[in-house]
Length: 126
Figure (spheres, rainbow, N blue to C red):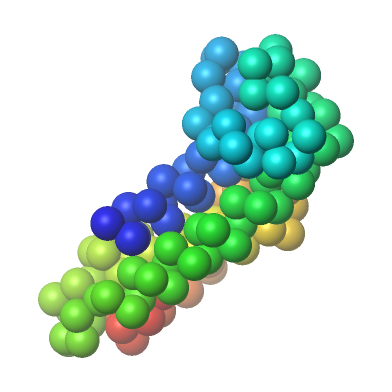
């Protein structure tokens, strides 16, 4: 569940702008209010508002904490038994790092980053 929450938060962050353009937003209204914004505002203007950067920044550590919780709960077993799960976690952690470095962009992982995720997953880390 913790890993699912982490993956969900990364996807929410990845697609904020695209989702807003389609008339939907999956960011908690409370985070929007905390940034001094109105969750009922027109979505395009809402996500373009300078204060919305605070919302994005607030979600980053929430996702990291969910990844940490998932790590703490993960069974200690051979990496190959959980390879798919660890590969997904490692890939999404890399996406989260890109989102932290370049907020408001849609990150994409190149071949090297994907290989790095695979190596991390094989080692039993994400």
